[in-house]
Image (cartoon, rainbow, N blue to C red; front, side):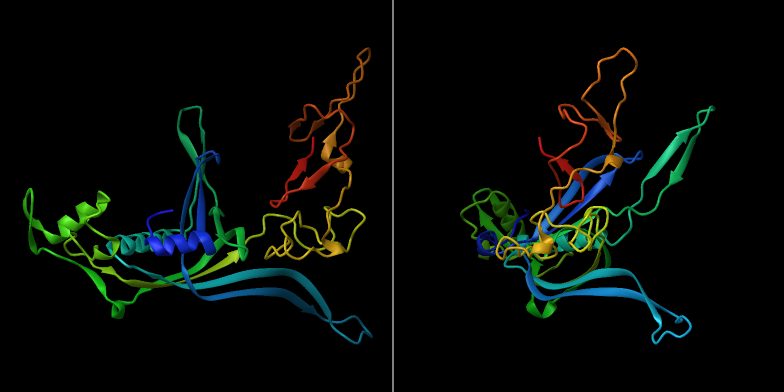
Length: 319
């Protein structure tokens, strides 16, 4: 985590949790190359979650009392508002950098695949915008895949700013500007400059606000099974389809035991997940099988008894 004033940082690490944002970058062939992550302890002023269900209404059948109502989807949207106060110049700079990174994730990111023709020319195939942003905020937002629909930040100039200072001061090496001296001492971690004394800088033409107000709106993109029934719950059509101690959406399971309909299943994997390799004539039948995704070494059975679904919806086998 980048610099944050010491008492805010220590209080955040021992009592609260930061707002964390990560972004995955992909190469032209779609391979993940690296991830970017930035976080900050924030002073929350508003938190709003809405679950918007989409229903369509159709004409009723002949003789029916009510029209036909069909459910299509539910959108989970979150709005966050918070303040970023600054006690010194370094704090203000980091606040602005955090807002700069938030502003960048509002823009769609694209990647390209390309093929080479027999003549050596590249043919590019531009894909749609990547859904590569994850948001984490304690147990309220737990590493969810999101896209940002709105972001705004407002410097509160009534709270004041940290200004450039060219006031000459005498040092052992000669005369220098006050802002330049404070920048150098803080960068060196010098005990001669307490945190609260770093109140001016040497960046001519720049002002650093002492407080910034931020609001951001996101829509959750569920990349794991969610809802009742479905292929993840064979024989249990009324059970919740995603748990694994995650207890969606706010993780109250470790404190309050989950209800029976959210308990874990121990169902055997569906036969459709695997392709059993049939031995040819004269060969000894092999107990090893392959999944459609590749070989599964060490699993010596024609079906798997022990597996679970992780928080991302992937099947994880227990050795």
